[in-house]
Length: 136
Image 1 (cartoon, helix red, strand yellow):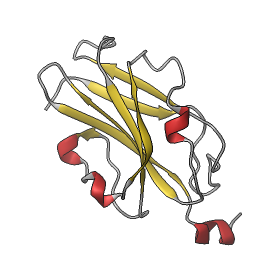
Image 2 (image 1 turned 120 degrees about the vertical axis):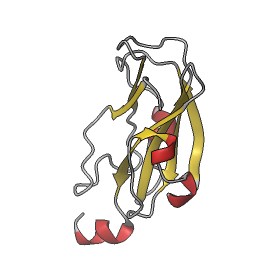
Image 3 (image 1 turned 45 degrees about the vertical axis):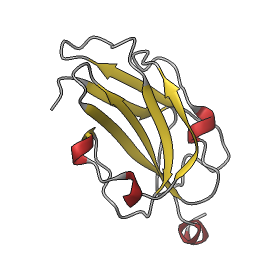
Image 4 (image 1 turned 135 degrees about the vertical axis):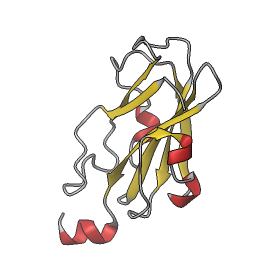
């Protein structure tokens, strides 16, 4: 386990029922990595990626061991974005996390703490085409 905390937050509201964020509308994520003392880890590198999601695989935050493998969510979409944590002050990675199509996705952030422990945090976004037809 790690004393570090990796937080990934959408820069705009995420509402799975309403389909927010909308496909094609740029938005970003706020990224924060804190050490065991609660201090921002300024030199860390965090990779943010967007993955297809089947809508049923569990999405949990925490250490990588508690997350399902990314294959459970589907293929990575587009290119990942590498960021340096800024205490969640600025929205980042808009080109990576903007939804390309009307379907479900998982936004995933991954980092490694000073002891080499892998960390991950993620959340789900989007709706399937069938969900869009039922509730546009």
